[in-house]
Every structure is written in C-alpha cells, then in structure tokens.
Length: 255
Image (cartoon, rainbow, N blue to C red; front, side, top):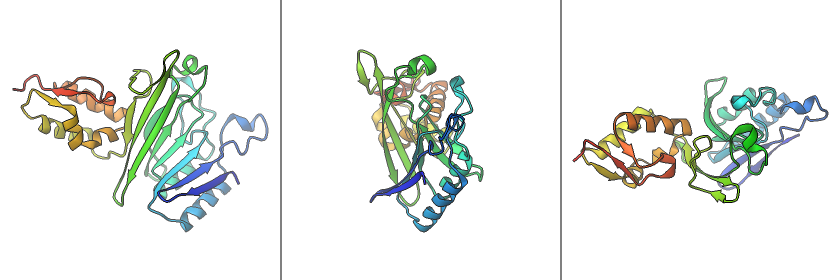
C-alpha cells in the first residue's frame, strides 16, 4: 500500500513511499499520497493511539518548498490533507528529503493545527552547491516528550570539500549546526528572561543562561535569528551565533 508503521518502545514511525505512484514519466514529476492511503493511515492511528514520540518520514515534501527557485510542481499531491491527519493525531515532526535545501519550520495545517516540518537537505549530492548554494548535511535529532509538550534539538554537521564533516560551521547561507523545535512562547518573553538573568552584570557565561533557559536551543532557525536580533538591538552582545554555543554574553552598560 506504500505506507507502513514501525512501533518501538519510545516512538511510532510512519514511513510513506511518496514515489509509490511513479508508474510513468508524467507521474514521476511529483510525490503523491492518495486519499485511500490517507484513509489507511487514519484508520491505523485511530486504532493505535499512543503518547509515544511520533515521526513521519517520506521522500517528497508534503508542503510547498519553492524557495531558491527550486520549483513548485514536485510537492506531494494531497500533502495538506496528510499533514492535517498527522497534526490531528499529534505527530511531533515530519521529515522529508527531495529538496536539497535543509529547512526547519512550523506549519499551520488546514484545520489550524501546528506541525513541525524538517527538510533534511542532501547528504551526498555532488551538484548540491551549484543549484542551491547549500552544502551537504548530516543531522542528529533528539526529541523529548511528556504528556504536556514535545521539544527537540537538531545537531547538524556540514561537509566541506577536502576538509570533511564539520559540526561547528555556521555558513550564513547554510543550515545552523545547532537548532531545535518546540518552543511555543514569544521571543520577547525569552529575551526578557535572558535580560533578567544578566541583570547589571557586565559579562555572564552563556552556559549559565542556557542551563536555566534550555528553550534557547528549542528555537527554530528563524526564531533564533529573531532572538539574536532582539539581543543585539537591546545591546546584549553574545560572543558568537547562538547555534555555535557562545562562551559569553556581555552587557556594555553593566558593572
């Protein structure tokens, strides 16, 4: 049927073969999940409700991914309907490939539910840098879930030719070496918490801040960028990008 579930002690994994309907050239332009497949997924999830970590894995992108002039024709047919079902049954993350452009984002579904979408980029394409300006990447995803919330981090290594895999490389055009998902509050709230911890001190170890506010590493790349801009605007200076785990945060007006 082109879909299967894998049940483990800690997680439920849904694997979807998005090329299942590639029977000819015209069909192979895009991915597809049929309404009958979605019905089977729904029936299984209704009969196997669980509080475990829930991950969906497929090749094509179930939501439009057209930035960098990568095109719009290859998105999964019925992808929005699929996401709506996965969000209804509280899936924690959807991971896909196909687009050689790593991208982590929160997506609002048709029924106004929120779900995390992770485009993993490419691991080994030789032409990747030419078409997308993105290097090859390898990710380790850690997810923590309880009855109230799910939060995760993504540690990413980037491949540099003649160098190898680098886990502390922040290419401004690439994917950050450390990011995450699951933070639901406002960035302003997190900024005020950081500001209160720094107080009137001139220099504070960044690890002191993150030990008390671990949600800093549960921000998506766009949320992290917003936090960095807010810190800078308010003259709280970190010694490097957040994704590189800075050593200190400084307050020029401190004592």
